[in-house]
Amino acid sequence: MVFFVAGLLVAGFATGAADKDKGDKKVDTRVFEMRTYYAAPGKMDALHARFRDHTNKLFVKHGITLIGFWSPTDAKEAQQKMIYVLAYPSREAADKSWKAFREDADWIAAKNASEKDGKLVDKVDSIFLNPTDYSPIK
Image: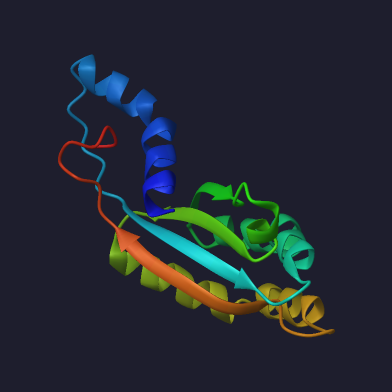
């Protein structure tokens, strides 16, 4: 799965590689975070709704760049996992953004409302990523 998402990242930033070929020496110093959410049984639709209706807007509000969201192609696995990638100017910026997000009254209200019938997420995996020196994103 990591290779699949990494491939999508490369494809999503191919335009950045084209700019570099034109002599643009700008280096992307962002740090990326790949997160995998494991939904509680029967809660994936509610989790998607929370992201669609609340979470994404709040991420942007707190300086988090949305790169992409994916569901596995296998229908059963798609009801269990959601994978997404975010970007930040630095790891320190990521920590600051997450702190502000978690303390945001709008997030707390949205989370509480969405979980009135039980938690939506059983587990979250998170990994921070730096592009390699040969990545089209650099």
